[in-house]
Each structure stands twice: as structure tokens, then as C-alpha cells.
Image (cartoon, rainbow, N blue to C red; front, top):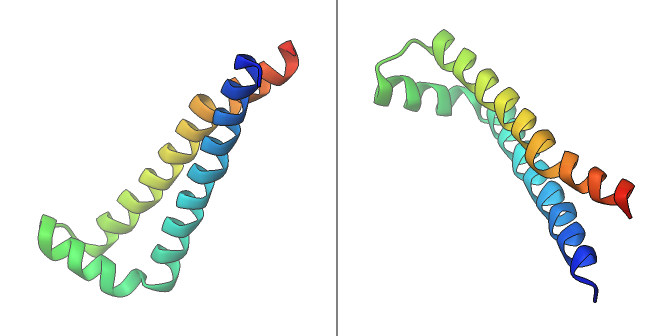
Length: 81
């Protein structure tokens, strides 16, 4: 297997796996949001409203990181090929 193909495959699988983690985290917040929010609010001493904002900010930043560090390099390697 060519080394460029290997690198491209690594970026592809990183993208798939990271989007899987993002979907799992998003579903966890949606489906079990109440108990998780109460637990984190108690641990960090924040209100549940601030916890909700922090969850949204985390998920948004994680998605941007996936796009920048996984998907963009994968697409660039596809274009160069």
C-alpha cells in the first residue's frame, strides 16, 4: 500500500471515529441531559443553564476541530491524488 493512501485512510478513519464520538456525546446530552447536567452542575458549582451552554460550546468546538484537523486534510489528500 502506498504511503499516501495509508495517510489518507488514517484521516478518513479519524474523521469517521470522531464524528461517531460527536454523535454519541450529542445523544448522551439529549437523552440523559437532566441527570448529567445535575451531576456536572454539582461537581463544578455552576447552574444547569451554564452547563447547557458549556455542552453546546464543547460540541460546536469539537465539530470544528474534526472539520479542520480530520476532514480538511483528508479532502486535500483526495484532491492532490
